[in-house]
Length: 104
Image (tube, rainbow, N blue to C red; front, side):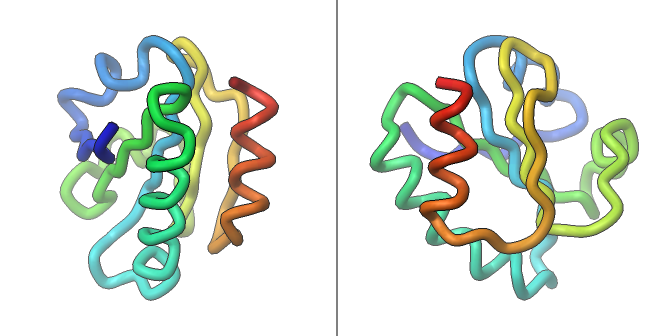
């Protein structure tokens, strides 16, 4: 499954069912660029167990504000539309995989 890009408008529909990892990021953010390949690897390994989505906080400030995102990258795990976990800052792949495994 490919990583999807969500917007303020599509956010609720994209995170409403199953386990979804949302990466709140911005193009100018160095740690956000570092985590992108980690998310690609997780997406390839976890297949359809977890959906991975990215939300550009500059283009979609409403959703970022709604969830209190103060620094990026912030990664939130949603399960059936509810936030069940949150990680702030760059994380190695193993740490993110451990967070996701708790919710699959």
